[in-house]
Image 1: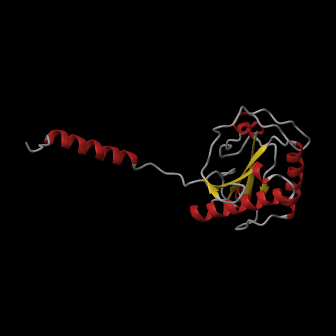
Image 2 (image 1 turned 30 degrees about the vertical axis):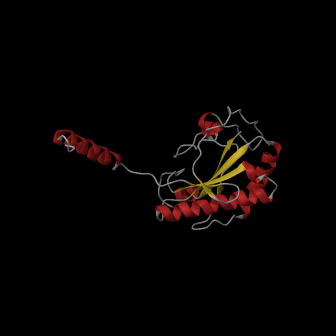
Image 3 (image 1 turned 180 degrees about the vertical axis):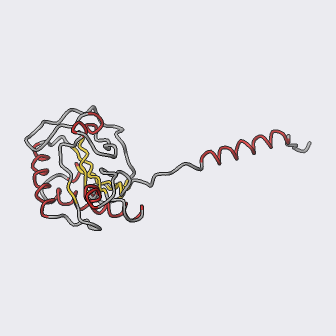
Length: 196
């Protein structure tokens, strides 16, 4: 006996398939986050799976303990961060279209290296950020160069590479959502998300 398909069931299956495809398309998609492991190869955003509970870090004269989301090493939401969301390590800043560390950035990273050597349980995700100018792809690449340059300098100062991870957010998470050079200068940065 030959196989016969019920046209109604076939039509319903086709409609359901089309709705699933159309429903999966649409909506604004965020660009991928570029991350690198200590060896320099790219890796996906691993989130906080497998991490134990976060403990607050000790405060020092130039350092504040993180509270809330930042204490778990998650990204701090865009916009101006309040003192309760601040990382214990200050951001460093970059010149326009550059991943080169300035003298001021090197001095700050030397303080960070000392702090990290005194807090051996701390791990850091170095986040590379850019201002709003340029394409998404360009800024993701530039953010990755900034994060890598920062991570590599910390390694050269004696911080174990296994404790540092570089990730790029490009222009997707601005610290200052304004326009103009003052806002853009704040957004050209490397941010440090500290976890245990």
